[in-house]
Image (cartoon, rainbow, N blue to C red; front, top):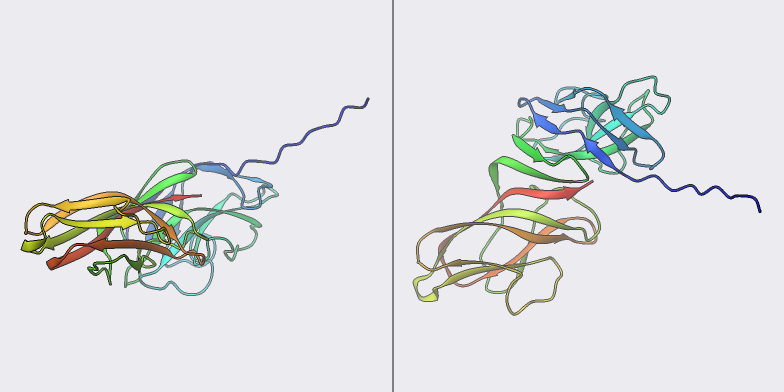
Length: 253
């Protein structure tokens, strides 16, 4: 009997490509290697490269004009012939960036955010494999985060990227709240978007005194079917202060 060759599909691995904000206009990407988005070829970067907020094409924005207060996907782009060394771009699209010539393949490797200038918001990235954390140097205030006796949903679009259809992710969150004197202990409870209402929240912050309490916690969140990230919470009666801040989030590549 003739032997039949067995060919395994490639693994969508990623190693390296540590991301650093060198300045308000420059992002540095360290050496690394990964499978391209089509899982056909490898992209190997031997030395660090840069992204510049003022550049267009390789080494900058893939197309259009940089917008303020916007989250962009970072991609490494490669040449399947091996003739041209890899470069990087940032794009509004996680899955379908405009890949500049002479490159013909890409892989999403991370995220960045712009401020109103627009320039790059200061951030730090932890991790070198498929799962990574992005932390903002200055926690980002969640606009529209308001107290509610029943579970209410707040979109995190301005602080966490659209991660995909019903993707579950981890959020590093800070909440500042002042419970009303007659409602001690004060509590804030969280659950993933779309989950059934539990008797007790999946994560709970508790305050024993009627002063402004400041708590940080890593909680499980979930995107909707359109990929928009949400946080769901409820709380006991609040006196005055009720504020939420995104410290960072974990994402998978």
